[in-house]
Amino acid sequence: MSTELNLRFPNPEQVVVRFGDDETAVLPFQNPLTAKDHADIRWYVETYAAHSLGDPDDSEAARIRDQLPVWGKALFDAVFGDPAARRWFNTFQDADDPAKLITVSAEHPAILALPWELLHESTAPDGAHLFHEQISIRRRFAGAGQGRPPFKISAKDRLHLLFVVSRPEGVGFIDPRADAAAVLDAVDEHAPGRITVEFLRPATLDALLDRLDDADKPAVDILHFDGHGVFDAAGGILKRNKAATGRTRRRRRDVPRRCAGRIAEYRLPAVRGQ
Image (cartoon, rainbow, N blue to C red):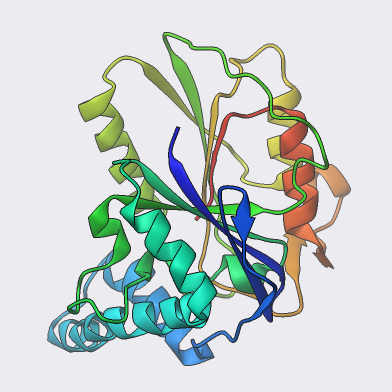
């Protein structure tokens, strides 16, 4: 079992750092990233990484790449600037365990959407992000299990992976094949013949729930969601399947809570959000 450090956000302006049975008091937290910072990261990861268009793109990408450790250090200081929080981070980092995990627990999408993978110690040389130390980052939607005890996962010889590739309307194009290709290549390399793959069509919430209910198809072991980096501060936008409703409707809902609550009912042992 991994050594875990938990960053719990009761709201977007407060954080509690927990290690083992010990935790800090509720500490203030201020998001150090601006809307432009988020837009730059989104462009770098989703547009430039998928298809560079030439020298101007390379120049802009280099500028953003130089900012990655700056953003990582700012995010690190925002969480671990308090001496008590830094003390528990140091204890976690010094643990004699090669498998370390930082879990970000929150209900607000503004916290979950932060680029926690960029976390970078303030005093470390630029580029020494925490993931280079084999520290994994996990996001946890607080309350998704609604108080249910953890379920036991049974080992299987073969797993079934369901891809959900979703792109909202009215935003920049992102090649829907890029992420899937990388995952499929990794599966072929590390687990050849042990994982079957299926793509959800259409990629709507209704279709997903119908698929998970379909006992005539293979049970889903892994749900891989490949979405878009667009964040709407007013809340999620749910697009209903036109075939199911007779008309297309876009409704603001607490979509993360609804999705997480329903998916938890299906006892999926692995959910990858992006």
